[in-house]
Image 1 (cartoon, helix red, strand yellow):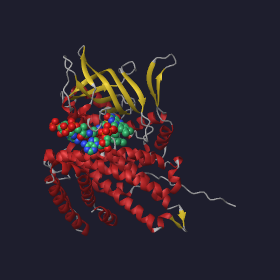
Image 2 (cartoon, rainbow, N blue to C red):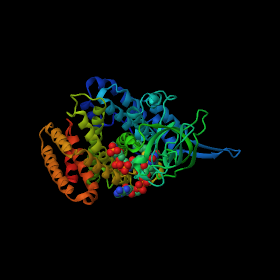
Image 3 (tube, rainbow, N blue to C red):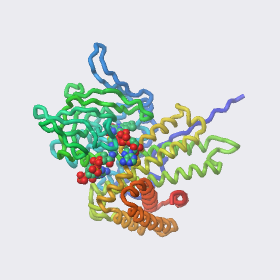
Image 4 (tube, rainbow, N blue to C red):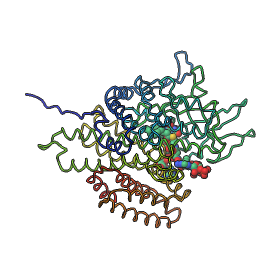
Length: 537
Ligand code: UCC
Ligand code: FAD
């Protein structure tokens, strides 16, 4: 008697397999760029389901360990990581995941190319994408505020040589507050002409990095400090001294987290850590926002990548698993569920790559750019939409990862199917780099500061007018009109009323911008777009 064994889901080349990514790049990129990158993406698409995936699995299976003491009782605070984690560092450098964004060899398209690569990498990276996000953010920050003094550091952050490539941390959160950093207690004290930091950093991810950017409060010679966030300045820290020991840093413990198990996130005590002031005193929050706006964009690219990974697995599985005489994907309920997931996924994909396109165009500005906007307006739209994109893509990924787990039935709940890891990992997207509430409030802050709502409406209308005529286009135009009226009415509610509606506003804007960015494409899947609009409009 032969026993039944269920075939599991299979991952194929993640570039070849991704019709949406291929058609998007095909439409967006000039022929010359496409010629240069296609073979590379195809090669990488294969690596992320073979050797790179094995590195990630190994890193996940052997989470980091903290050795606080050596055999003789000396405090060493050594974080021991799996070889998979260090191999992922090498891969990140060689594949130029950060460098692509700064070499800018594809002009305004550089960010699209870079994020296409990150999108392939993330679900097979065991969250090595997290230090890469902060590395890219630090490169951006030092490009803006660092000047010549930080050129060498910038070169490390953007290197493609594994032994030269540095990653960065981003130390903002303290016990007294993560969303609200104004209560931060870390002090910067000048001792013998050098800045030394004292305090506790409550969450510091990828403590395997070579450097970090940190907020701290400068203490005057009379011992006083400026309270609130205007008292916070920005500092550059090298984590190790030249002899390899820690830069007056104690690793109090590694966090025991729900997910992101391979990623070493620590609690640190700074006990006179040598640091260098970056930029202007008291402008730490403003300056570090150039970093967290990059990491927020990475959060979106990696969210949609994670969303696609579970959707791909669930779709493949539903073409194999049989129940009640049919493969489950042929049952109308499963088919409809997968279409709904795909519709939300495509919406998130187009929204994310629209912002990547805007970002790339802002960095390598050309008067005749693909968005038809001047540089200041590109900046205003980025400022407005980055928090919306981050919260929107994160929440969709969290929601759909939970739903798609169920497609695997009981096996989806079993550890070695790999699905529980995806489920646990997804939760973090909406917490770090600003929670959903905090980013909704950030949207309000951007709206108030820049008066950019009319600009956004104008931009979306202009983009819609460029799309070929269709029912969907008319429906989106009508929806934009409705949203504009709703925003105007909500403004009249006053500060508290407006704040209570901020989250609703963010999701409404997210839905609308997703639909517009989707319609900008040439090969729109109207069936999926209609499903999306029926659900969210
Ligand atoms: O979580 C972290 C790392 C996780 C690991 C890496 C993940 C990588 C991605 C995934 C890859 C797999 S690091 C910690 C992240 N923490 C946050 O994101 C904090 C969330 N809280 C906020 O965003 C708050 O809104 C705060 C902290 C910014 C609020 O602080 P303030 O001081 O009360 O804010 P103000 O007073 O409104 O803003 C101070 C200045 C202003 O400029 P000026 O002085 O010119 O008026 C603001 O306009 O900062 C400016 N500013 C911004 N500028 C504030 N927010 C922004 C912004 N988003 N963009 C530009
Ligand atoms: P709180 O600020 O206490 O928020 C608690 C709740 O209150 C949230 O739901 C929030 O939305 C809500 N809330 C707060 N303010 C408001 C408001 N005004 N209106 C309505 N609701 C509000 N931080 C770093 O600096 N560096 C790192 O490397 C880092 N790595 C991390 C890694 C992981 C795995 C995790 C989970 C976190 C990491 N963090 C890091 C910390 C992270 O950025 C913070 O946890 C996050 O910003 C939230 O801050 P908090 O934990 O203090 O929550």
